[in-house]
Structure formats: structure tokens, C-alpha cells
Image (cartoon, rainbow, N blue to C red):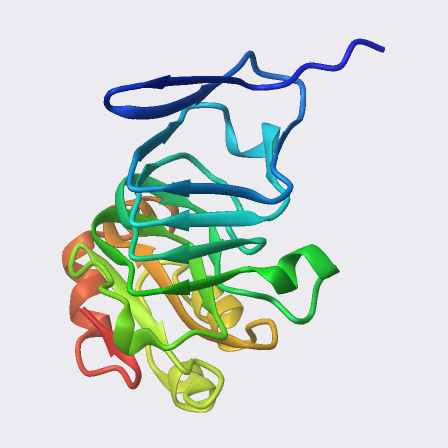
Length: 199
């Protein structure tokens, strides 16, 4: 079977990681990138970060699990869906190597993205139309009693029973509203005043 590897190109702007869809690309192990812009256009299912560091980088990517990577002082742009940031002690050893600190997500659209075992005071999360659930397990009972528009209660059930070490999950209101058969306005009204929710 033919094995493919991603194409990495370096120029004055930074690093582009591209490749055809289908094969699996391994990023790492022990990769370190510092002070550069990294654009990953390989699809999330095709790209598997192994281990390494991104330090003071600007990152643009699709659905990638960043849990194995150590992210310090990075700036995120573009859309990120279903991404995990920070180290996860409940998974394989390579996920335990990651971390996230001093990073800025304020210009990114995050949907279904989770943050694990990290100090959120060092991290800038995006505001509305993104919204964040903090310490959702502690607020699960109250969240279950609230009325939610459309089928958004399915998201609440998922958020309220997070994997070990989850400190936050971030969602994108237009995306969630569309999938939950509701409107952005109804969703915002329902989230306003909900415990542990940051708009």
C-alpha cells in the first residue's frame, strides 16, 4: 500500500501543510515551530498530530485534535470544529504531552471545541456569536431544568457530561442554531443568564 506524507512548504509567510484527501498524515513526532504562520489545509481526519510544540505561532486549520501538541502564545484564526486543546489524561500517552497556555482564540470561530486541564485565565476565547460553557458538569442539573429552543437540549446533554479534565467547551451560535432547528436570536435568549455560560 502506498503511503503519503503531507507536503510542507516554507516561505517568508510561514508553513503551509497540504496534501490530497484520503491518506493519513502524521504531524511530528517532536516537531517544534516558533514565530511563524502555519496554514493547514489537509482535512482534520487526514492529519494526526503526534507530539510537538507551536510557540508564538499564528494557526489556521480545519478539524484537528491539538491535544498531543503544546501550544504557547499562539493566535488562532479561521474556523475550528470539534477540536480538543490541552492535555487529556484520559486518552493515549501522546495526548498527555499536549497543553495550551497564553493563546488567543478571539478571532477564531470555534464550534464543539473543548479545552482540557488548562488555566483559562491565560486564554482569550471568542465572544458572541461564539459562546462558552464553563464547568458544565457542576451546572448540569440546572441546565437540564431549563427550556431550550429546538433540539438544543441534545447539545446540553453532551456538554453536561464532559470527559475528565474538561474546563470549557465553545460553540458557534449560527452553526448550532442551524443544526438544532432554531434561530440565533432564540438561542441567545435561552443562553442569557444560564449558569456557567459566557456570551
